[in-house]
Amino acid sequence: IQALHNQFQAVAERRALHDDKVVECRHYNVVGGKHLLHLVAFTPDDQISIVPNVAGDVVEADLRLARAPEGTEFLDGELFLLIAGNDVLVCRSGLAEKALSSYVLHLAQIAGYENEDVVFELMKRADIDKLDLIQRDGVRQVSMKTVAYRTSIQDVVERNKNLRALRSFYGEVQAVFGFEDAEDLDQENLKVEALVTFDKLRGSAVSQRNLVQMAESMIEDEEEGFMIETLSGKKIRASDMVLSKSVRLDQFGKSIHHITAWGALQEYDQELRRGR
Image (tube, rainbow, N blue to C red; front, side, top):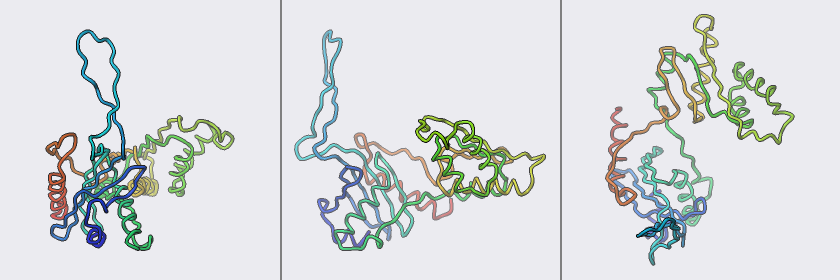
């Protein structure tokens, strides 16, 4: 990151394509060995809908398209980042963190780096406290609310082949809906909820261990839409498993100022390193 920004110091040089949008680094700084980036995304020569003022007894009024003022572009999204070694903190505003990968790869290719030397993937960091809770309390049930269509169900089963309960569940779905014989079925509109429950009276230590393993694998694979209930009754949702913090920041128009966002990221970084 530092080498690329030492080489490409002008904003006009720090551009890349990401999902048909231009991603541009508007601000870059290094504070205490930690890299701070402010990425923006825009669509060149884009138009947006505007609401013309109306007066009198007008009963209907159309919207109009407008272009950005000369020498400007409409903002599609922003991404604020703090990078310290392999740790990355993000504050999103309409731009996902995958834009960072596209941005770095593009600049690195121009700089002459080999792809394998710069390609990376950002992985969500699990909340260790929640993992400890699962292992300490045990798991009463796991609910998967977004197992919706054949490929999704198969994917979960493939990653948990040792869980007989999940294989049995998939077998029942296959039997009822005939997945094997109906490849053209509109399966994406099929909504299925899988609920795997541990019976404290009849369940064995092995079945409890399998359920804990299933819960942990869903967390590691960053599944969405699940809920884990521990034996003590505590409920943990997918959104609870990722390290995150909600903060209120002053607005800058319909966005936030990069200095404000960076400040919040630096504060959160300090909290995490203090072990809070």
